[in-house]
Length: 174
Image (cartoon, rainbow, N blue to C red):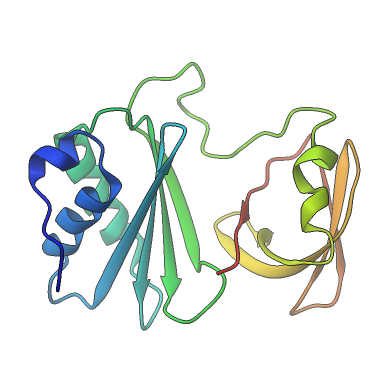
């Protein structure tokens, strides 16, 4: 049985209600969206048999979110993912509420925090944008220090270095 959600719940920031509204507008497009919310950021993962078309989906969601203006949602992160794959094909972020760095789309790690944030992932497969800033690739986390981390690309077998001076983003593997 499919759960139905009211637009009022979506306006209150309920992620499942927001996903239900988006999925309703995507009927017939063979794309299904799941949503989660944490610390002011609404994460939307769009699943499809092929990588969902980024520009269409981002524009549809951006317009809908700006119109809805849900409570407590400051930023929206959208990921396009092929059903059954462990890593998103693409991602895009945008701010709903004004922030001091409104033009920034990437997470800038603070100096000295990489070890504390990423040590728990050593030896695990993660998704990281080591080849392209807009596409996650599978990699194994091999080292995390205060100011840098190393991963080994699953596809390439090469070791990649990331410092706290360069923007990068990581995605959980499903």
